[in-house]
Image (cartoon, rainbow, N blue to C red; front, side):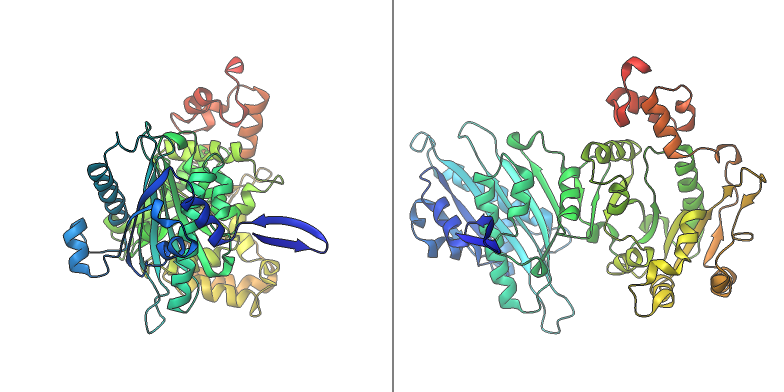
Length: 480
């Protein structure tokens, strides 16, 4: 066992990779196959080395050659090998073979599993660091249907051999966790990094499915990845299942809207509709290759202290009901978000935001940790093909609309502000609904919690019904 100490105090006890593999091997009920293609090959080796593997491993296969791999699993439509569909084919194919070749009457108590990975490690030029898909399909009761855990990883190491060894440890953690930590998905998630330093590996997507995970909300699992520092950004779609950001954003035009969405108001959706219309009108933007993202930062979720998971799911529920893709990030500064997007695309990017967010962008205090200060941040923010769409604010005292023309920034920032405005990087959203600018999410939230009347009219069509039906944000049926 690996023991972590702090002074004389024992903090945690983590089983070693060998002890995990051995415990699985010595369980007379667990029985299955390992299929590893590409740079895989390492997971099953840990089980062989631990001892007692003959009672656990039905077959270990390495379809390293592409032609052999295609002959076994078929050819993908995109002719790629390191993909989620490929992994799922591998898991199903190997499980079908187990059921076909083993007589269930002869093995009534066996818990079948198929483990698979399809991975590409770092290339010789070291420009591509490597990534992969890892998954397990398994039983926890011979009479139950199969459960499945699928994850995507990105390597941070710069040595192919080290990446392979890291993958082998992760594979053991996954198999062990599937059988011994399945009743606590959050702990199972954390266990993926047992005996692996966090700077060696990034896990940026995971999905749980099957009878034992019916109660698991995969959006919440996404949040855990960011909260635990396993990745800086996750994404999920309208159906609630997690998406791989790299796959969704690859070579796309990206329009991002950051907000609290607590709850989504008419202002949020007006900003969305107007900015989307302007973004798609750009000559460089192909509507068919455009991705719109509603983004929430981890710091926003922590605004009231610790992250409230129920509150997070309430926000996610509404955005999903509106058919939107949602991203949770650990990028408080906008330039870091744009840098992240730039990993996947060189196409046009747009940020839609309100006046206060724009004021923050031009506030020097947010860039004190950068050696180049605000100039470095702006260089990273605007060197890409980026435009900012600014949604106005109505001054209650004067009745004036605050736009890019009359926005007040710090005197030292005036010339910098003018430079970006005059070069068409800051654009006002003009055709907005003037009658809704009095609506603020925090006011609507208070009205919902206090049981006040009238908040329904401040939300997009259908949203208030969803809030009432699912009792989101503390809404009680008795009050509505």
